[in-house]
Image (cartoon, rainbow, N blue to C red; front, side, top):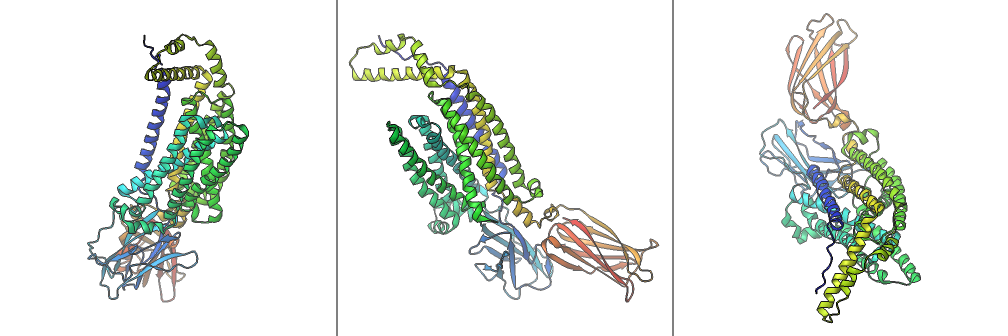
Amino acid sequence: MSATAPHAGPSPIRRPLAAAALLTALVSLVFGLLLAGAGPASAHAALTGSDPADGVVVDTAPKEVTLSFSEAIAVGDDSIRVLDPSGKRADTDTEPKDLSEGSTVRYGVALHSGLPDGTYTVAWQAISADSHPISGAFTFSIGAPSDTTVALPSQEAGGGPVGVVYDIARYAAYGGFVLLVGGSAFVLACWRGGATALPMQRLVVRGWLTLTAATLVMLLLRNPYTGSGKFADAFDLAGLQSVLDTKPGAALVSRLLLLGAAALFIAVLFGTYARREDEREKKDLTFGLAVGGGVVATGIAATWAMSEHASTGIQANIAMPVDVLHLLAVAAWLGGLASLLVALYRTPDIGSAAVRRFSAVAFGSVVVLAATGIYQSWRQVGSWSALTGTRYGQLLILKVALIAVLLAVAWFSRRWTGRLTDSAAASEEASEEEPASESDSVSADPDPDPERAAQLARQRAALTATKKKRIRDADPQRSGLRRSVLAEAAVAVVLLAVTTMLTSTEPGRTEEEAAGGTPSASAPAAGGPVNLKMPFDTGGQNGKGTVRIDIEPGRTGSNDLHVWIDGSDGKPMDVPELKLALTLESKDIGPLPVVPDRLAEGHWSASAVQIPMAGDWKIDVTVRTSDIDQVTIDKNAKIG
């Protein structure tokens, strides 16, 4: 009679599969929503000013156009293009001139002489010092505004399908790093027996494969990501060579070389180390793997630190090693958490001692995260207003809240650890109580046929695995710990996604500096009519009155300005001279003079008054009531 393997039942298998499916769905949902809402990577260097300014009308053609930025950038041929109303090039330089002085970052291009009147378009594209592409466009006019055939680009640098794929690779790279480093650290520091567990091997190897594949994709897409935005340019050898000459390209190549060393580390960890039985030799090998693996992990983490936020801005020499420590702590905590989840769901052998050791590692990681996170937050945010008023600051608040939730769930999880029954002891007790009839029926067949013997061996293995799963799932403490660790992992997935988003978001400090440190400087362009009322007193006879000013539509671009002057008796009042000037002090723009024309008694008007950008403008009004009596008054108004 043929022996058959016993039916394992649905529960032990479906539970881990359901958990894996839940995590997969959560990862897909979180990353999908983040990528859908993120758009192109936010600019980390910002355009802080230009000469001529955006929207301004100049009387004579300038000799050059200059652009100022909040931090260092990399430029190449055609990074700044000036186009006349017909779309032809009006600049003479293919590569912008570096006009930077001290901490001021400025680039410019010379213009052809004798340019005709009309509206000119300035289109620019560069690479921020933290590796992210930035671009933009604005217009200015010579003489008077005119129609132009130039269409401003609707897609920012780093956008489009190439940008989406590149961002996906960035998220995958961080995830792979966490699994590779955290999984390896978990085996060496918390559960050495995990070196022989196939699920742990798969977790670490998949982390390595994910990080390697994502790095290759980023290296190939780097040229189109920062340039044309076309997938076909990924295989342009000249473009690839230019990428290798940049800091981000060098970081990606260095990461690939370090991943080669990581592959050797994995082979030793799950090969020689797993087979080593002598405790003394295994201890020595553990030390060697810890040192070698730590060096490789630190090097891989440094490839991010040397090419992103930490490499630019204030205190870069301190920020880069701090960033490396931060990344390693994230990997040890979140990667170890993923390893613990896999061990609890897919292996019956992990015991309470390993969980307690991971708790100690997680606590140390949290301490490092807190210290490095506080420094990074100060460096990247810099003020309370940037913390609450910028996207970077809001994401940072979300990250801190998620860490608090994760710590709370972790505390609840560790309550199960003290009551956790070690599977080795449980297996021994269950094996004594397990009826021998099934196993005996499998091994009692004396058939010498090798094929038949192999079939019986597979059946015995299946029976043993079924027994282990039954033992594992029968432990209520283990089941409770599995559920709470699964909840931790779910929060950790969201936390890792938010952390990755922070690396592609303009730091709050930079955003505020680009906006002049005032929220009004980045006010929306919708605007509305501006109405001002300012009393004055020139000090002479009949020198008192009130100036009323209306600016319509009160937004960037062309505006109509009306001024009424009322005497102290409330009636219209004529004055010999009236002048106005507009100044945007946060951007060092102005004063822009306005000389209105008299329309009627006490009423002046000026049309086509150009407001180059939104902000808190200071309006100076000079009123002269006699040959010697004159006064200048001012008031601020939010325009745009």
